[in-house]
Length: 180
Image (tube, rainbow, N blue to C red; front, side, top):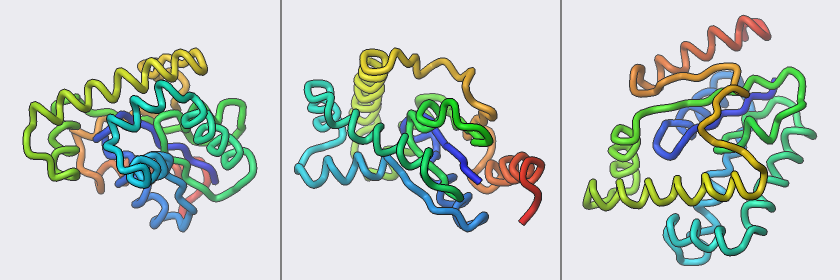
């Protein structure tokens, strides 16, 4: 089983990916976690590291090359990242999931997770981060991150909590591969 889980910051992809990995006993590879770790190792915020990635394409290209290699060489895996679905293009039998939520909902979640002080400040950082990422995806790969047509399932995580979203995905996964 191979599953990709993608979505914008704060949509709930990491939480959902962890739940899916636990439920189906799958390995989880999170490129967002890798990106955050790389930023922390350099003593940078995500927005600062994103700005560096705009100037140094090797950062994104290395992460994306790693994702592509993983999805093409491993079974029983969940690959979680903004571009995971795109990295799996051409691979048969990969379930590609996009998790969405309105920007204000996502910013509230990020603010809680990052323990940010100001909602307005977090909103500004999130909008800038998304702008930066969108520009890089378009420049590097010609990908329009707002085009969701490559995904098998698109779920709005504002409508359901993480467990309800998991239940929706379990129905889809079990229909494809059979229940655990």
